[in-house]
Amino acid sequence: MQVKVYTPRLIEIASEYLPALAKRAADSLGERANEVSATRGHLVRQAVQDGLLREFDELVGEDGTVDLVCDPGMEIPLELENRTLTLTELLEALHYKRTWAEMKSDAA
Image 1 (cartoon, rainbow, N blue to C red):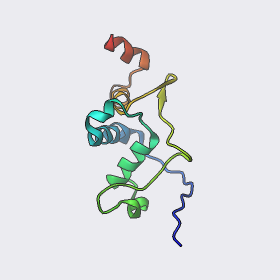
Image 2: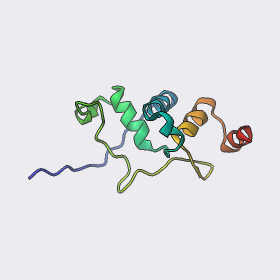
Image 3: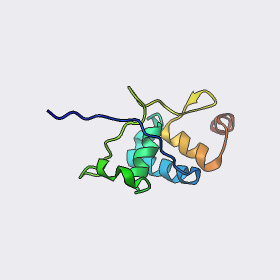
């Protein structure tokens, strides 16, 4: 019998990598990036694909997907000022280091 288990591990990704990781994760989703809630999983899986977390190389499948989950039960969406962000919004917030209020006023 084969059973896949996930064990908790703490990892660290340097903050300066986050905008690029968010961009590539958003690009991989295409138009869906405007609708999909951003999660830590999007960033971590992209970091694994980019080779930033070599200890997880064995989790990269032949098709390039990464078999990794970051939050038990479900991947919890990332929030800024108590609002769930899409991947596109996360990218914008990271890139420009803007608050949600500033982003919202620009959209109006």
